Image (cartoon, rainbow, N blue to C red; front, side, top):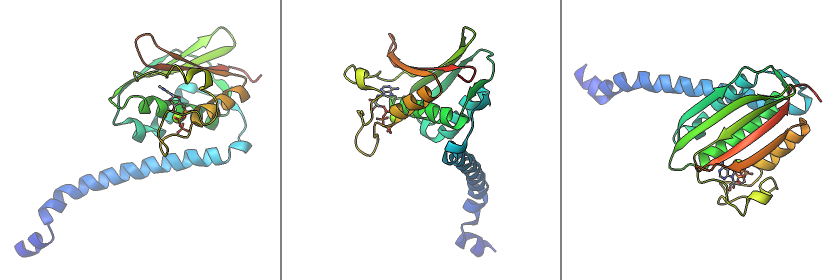
Length: 198
Ligand SMILES: Nc1ncnc2c1ncn2[C@@H]1O[C@H](COP(=O)(O)OP(=O)(O)OP(=O)(O)O)[C@@H](O)[C@H]1O
Ligand SMILES: [Mg+2]
């Protein structure tokens, strides 16, 4: 028995295998969620607008990019006020959030926090902002930020299509997207969405 155990690394397997299986199972569940979301994207044309809880949509989007954020984002601060459900195509708005979150993480290679704020603007609009503690948006990019193929990232890392897609999606929802640098450092992207179908 002792020889067999040694030959097959029994002690090592006995302690490591349960951990490995737990992590594998967690990974498979995450893949399941991502595939389900991708399926939504694939059927996007067919997807109708519907009343959506933005708070939940933010959480779904965060889960989707967990892997991209986990090594650089120390903390995700959330400031949510109670707002009504908002009419939108959820897979598209989630895609906007995913693009903003990945940009935020890529802007903070040394690490930092992301702050997400959800607010109501008067009777008819809501505002959702994603802010980071990165290097901020370069001045020369600011005027062309939402144009296709504008990127400061090396080939293979960025294509400069994330923000133009965000812009198109927001316009198709009767909303808008704004970008600014924060006085204390870092970039802030703000989405404005009408609550009701326009
Ligand atoms: N949070 C941010 N902080 C600083 N700069 C940013 C931020 N978000 C975007 N930018 C700047 O805007 C550029 C364009 O962003 P965009 O998301 O459109 O393209 P990308 O991230 O370069 O590539 P892709 O999104 O297609 O992978 C980025 O290359 C970067 O220079
Ligand atoms: Mg991007």
